[in-house]
Length: 337
Ligand code: BDR
Ligand code: CA
Image 1 (cartoon, rainbow, N blue to C red):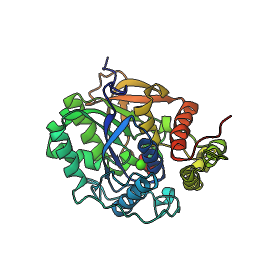
Image 2 (image 1 turned 45 degrees about the vertical axis):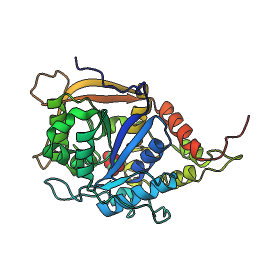
Image 3 (image 1 turned 120 degrees about the vertical axis):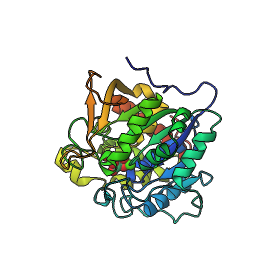
Image 4 (image 1 turned 180 degrees about the vertical axis):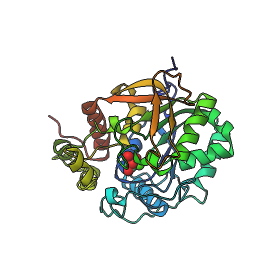
């Protein structure tokens, strides 16, 4: 039996968190959720090429922090391409600007003049207290930091990853986007974490597909704080979701887009929204047909090197309650009943 990940909020203050991301519409929503919570102390945001280019994910991360009135958050641009495989992006899902065509004010806050991998490595190396990592995109930055200095894993309290599919993938029949986009990095992270005993929670597509932004939930976002207050963030999020992954929605019969990445932040804020199962796992890196596949072994006896807590179910209504309550904090006062 594997130990349960330390997912409860720390008793003596907020959880110290680094968010590694590729915004991306659902990354943007995840950032807004995290930035609204006093339970999280965001030490920095690292960006990576994924849904769109590194330049665009880095611009979007800044736009979102400014939208949330958090221009003090430090953003570190990371790797512009995967470790081994050629780059793959998802502009057809997230739009050319990565935010579903929604135009936000050009960011004024600077990007930090330090590479995301250097920030990760040096922050973990010098961390006075354990750090949690939320991974919302391809794992290139964290894998590179762990290759450079594997012992930094000892400072990681918990890694929560959106990635993988146990059932059908969303890029190929076998693979989910984040693990497909950099399968070698995903393998490095899972295996190094297992070597150092770092708890890893993986939230796969099978679970995030339960977090559908239905028409009613998108309307609730538009209506946040109305009529007494205004919440431009709820309206901006609803606008970004309008055309998010329409082709996938149609193909799968969804009534709206799944909010993959916010599940990672929701797990940190309220882990009891999820069920998890401790299993052995690895990532297929070679086969052209199944590259990026999350391979799991429930018996734990078949030689897979990774050890993960695989999310297997989500309380979707609870998840949307949490999201709406947090995004509601950006607007005016809710109406008194
Ligand atoms: C994952 O891929 C990206 O397109 C999303 O931002 C999410 O991180 C879902 O497969
Ligand atoms: Ca993402």
